[in-house]
Length: 96
Image 1 (tube, rainbow, N blue to C red):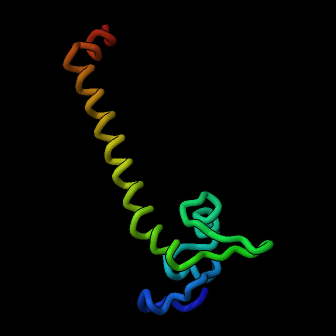
Image 2 (image 1 turned 180 degrees about the vertical axis):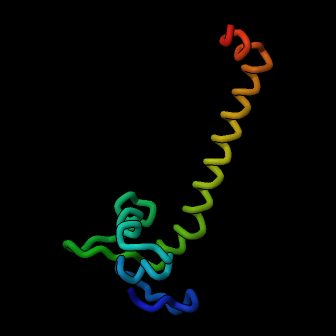
Image 3 (image 1 turned 135 degrees about the vertical axis):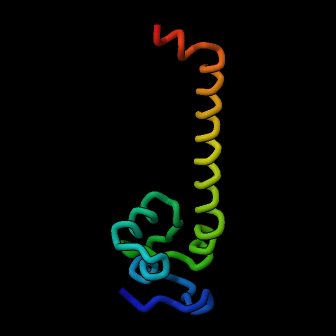
């Protein structure tokens, strides 16, 4: 693993997966999984994978925030649905 950059300005414009790992404090498999899934957009040149600095910034600012709010919304919708069924007697009726 390479040394971790101390500031955003220290990050090169184009990163390899190996250079991405210490920035996000993740392992090799996780780094490749993020790239393969498209969560971090990358460019391929033959077999080589490169991540542009602005794509990393996009992932850190927008990508991670979107996942959290989606999970919170889905969880609250599920809990509200259960409460409605309980209030209508659906859960008690099913137990009989």
